[in-house]
Length: 253
Length: 196
Image (cartoon, rainbow over all chains, first blue to last red; front, side, top):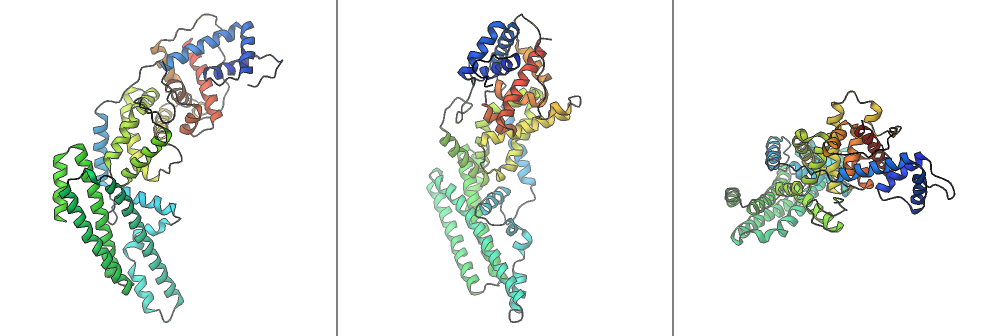
């Protein structure tokens, strides 16, 4: 509003001031000018009373609550969506992809790395590059680029694993000690496989088998950690059937 | 009676600090991204009460179930891209209100394009009366239904639900001044409708 001292407020300014009064943002100066105006303007007095009454009525409208059946409906639709989702990639759920994408963006990486075409066929160009290593700088560059992409893809898994491990560790107290021991044992086996695959890759960087073996081990670790979190959730919900099913799977793996 | 909720205050009346809310939101989002549907259910439990009320006041109780369901399904799909530029609550309300506006606009061909957008227009002239206005709940609900979608959204969020103008602005993706202006015009339009 900002009516200058000494000047009177007209009906247009008064209308705005009444709005600000309801919002409790009217300055003391404008409040005084509005009071002056309303002393002589019946129309604005009525407007102020009407708007105040409407404001109070709006605030006291009864709350409309969601029905109890709404969450089960949403959960069922989500479940159907998750089951039908074709976007499964290295066994990683869309959630994991999203988390990985966020992490990659956060560290300035590129989503280009996440293209399955690059991820599933990394060794062919590398092998070609090795064959032509003596003859072409372009081939060597390509090999370097593929290796760099593989390294970054591996980091993507590692970040996803770190996030999942953090959640699993924070919630591990919920688990039965025997189940926790089985999980630790399975994780140790997978970690060993990861170490061995890395060692193999170091001695044979272009080996398709070594690359696939490393990503397979990383994929298994992501899967196991996801199962752990799933198990904790089922236990929290008191879903005995769901808990038993996951434990059975964990013992098989 | 007041239902004004400050930042960090939950719809169930349980007050938490901004930091606690932000920490809880971050934890739930991390768990959701790891595929934890239980965490998504917690998000639903925390926000659905107040959000449902907004949606029901925007589109009517008959359509509220479908639109709230669509809101949470969309939230599930998009949560991976949530960067935390706003609070999780603001982000959810933005999804819900946008769905409501789409629904209302698709069903209101008669509303002029200017009133449908968040553009400025002249306030409705104040009726010339000297008697007291009587506002019943039913009249108010009917009046709300007759408001153009953008006016209705701003009025419901601010005057019915008690959001601050800066929160309304964040939800609607407009400037704070535009929120003030929309709410003000909505009040004047509603008054005209109630005095007919």
